[in-house]
Length: 212
Length: 129
Figure 1: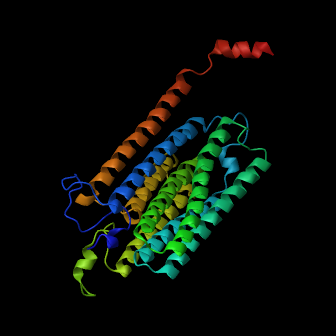
Figure 2 (figure 1 turned 60 degrees about the vertical axis):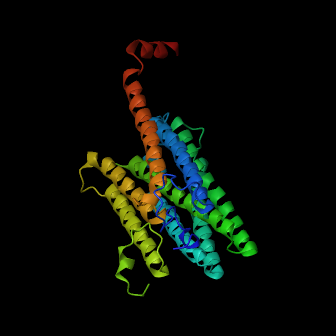
Figure 3 (figure 1 turned 45 degrees about the vertical axis):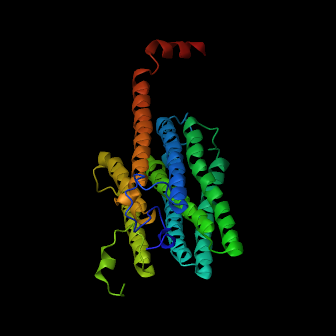
């Protein structure tokens, strides 16, 4: 198996390497995703601090609206579906990108971005209707921590969408060169990680928060 | 490698496949499992036929299972020797996340329980008005 066909996901297949550095420095197609994986993990640690803050403050509603009064599970279900399918389609884009299929790659990436936009649109609608009801971040400690946690995730999705647009332009302009594929791989790791964080958000904030 | 090579089916989900079809199938399996776990989560949260106090714990277990699905099928974390560095970094990340979350929730819950306003303080605040 050649190095080029192995640039999907974090696994680089086929080599006899133990990963313990016996053979000297690895190639860029292995070092770059590893470094990006470390960044993603540190990002997840950042989110864990926001989750801990939210869990500490969830009952500090200051007489204002509580989680069960504010959150709508049906909206969250649509958001969850949009982000999950977006993550899946991003994987399909990586499969076609590995085979240098321009049309399918751009198509899948476009669909990834579209589903991400749907997710972001629903989230912004939820935020604006909450603020309209007087349940903005300044209402209580619970709402401050809610907007910080979910807003930080939304900000990540926004950055991911900008990155996605940049990658589509770069693929279109420069083709499937090794360094472009490495960037695309890092984007896909970022996008899948955002979905993992969303799993924690919809479970802890939206489902456990609205239990009867 | 022929089209019907049985070795093709023995590839771990995270390993790079040679065939476009088997790679796509691996992603479809991941999506199916994730959808299933999401559906179970939403069902568990809205049904009344389960024992109430256990629901939150069950939801956390379902969420951790779904994160595992994402890691294996989408992020291609495997137990293979070439994945050692990624797995070790992940293990360290999980350790820090566990310490931050459990530590904070534990300490803050105790402080809430032990450092709430005493009767004298309550008395002072009512007198002030």
